[in-house]
Amino acid sequence: MHEFSPAREYLLTPFVRYRIASDRWNDVDKRSLVYFDRFCTERYPYYNGISQEMIDGWCRKRETELNISCIRRTNTIVALIRYLQDRGLANLQPPTIPVGEKRTYIPHAFTVEELEKFFRECDRRAMGVQKSNRAEKALIAAVVFRLLYSSGLRTVEARLLRTENVDLAHGVVDIKYSKGHDQHYVVLHDSMAVILRQYDAAIRRIYPEREYFFPGDSTQPLYQEWMPLTFRRIWDSVNGSHAVPYDLRHNYATTNINRWVDKGFDFHDKLTYLSKSMGHKTSEGTRYYYSMVPALSAVLEDKTAAGFNEIVPEVICDE
Image (cartoon, rainbow, N blue to C red; front, side):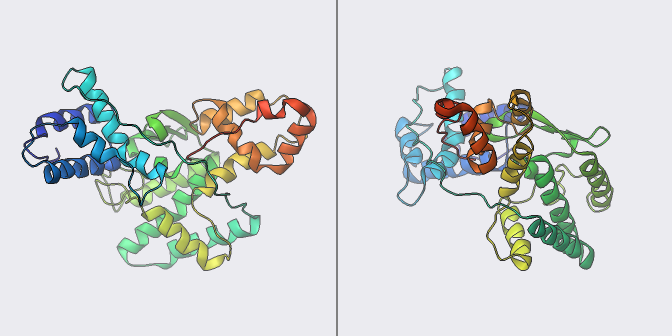
């Protein structure tokens, strides 16, 4: 269990136990709660418990951060307040959280040549290194980026994926920690399931009792910055364009949607399947990708005319 200050331990430790029991605890939550406790101790050294002033002070948006960064930093504290309220342990009000900025980043449109170069380089590095630590991380990179590409998983879903939640026999991944902590299942392509079985057999020789499918060590996941740093290092070595690992998720969505062009306009079932697989609560989140598929957008506009804007609304997305 994590160590908190005596002034708040009696509130924070039961909350941590509750979140762990609910399978909704991760390293991001841990850091947020520890930093919040330190903030309270430094600013209010003689206060026992949690006050509204502490909550408002910690959750207030900083001048140097984006709205979405503030939201991520304070999500755990908002959950803590709800936990305490529901149990009558504190009379606290959730802070006013800023609305996430409308996404302006345009995901990279991969070419077949770029992807081939990237995955060849992943494989070359996995086969070319001899030192143990470098070898295992190169192996992980070659597999985890293929998983993102072939399944549309969020990067955080892959990073925090536990070994017990990967059904290698049936090729099904149980995503229990996701955006908003919504559980969903992803059925892997047969070729990806084969790769994961081979990877699992290899990584078990290094971490026979690992907790995470893509381990940082035997008990911890990869650190948060590992995936973007590793992706850029490999990508930039073989491609001149700019891309980030999350673009693989966008590529998965748009590639699937592109297949529906000229296949008829009745695609509601396909949209629903894609939405569920990608972990969206409703199909509205998946419709966000329409704007990134020029061919499909043209078909939609041609077939719906004035109703196009109703079908494809403006969506604020913090993906």
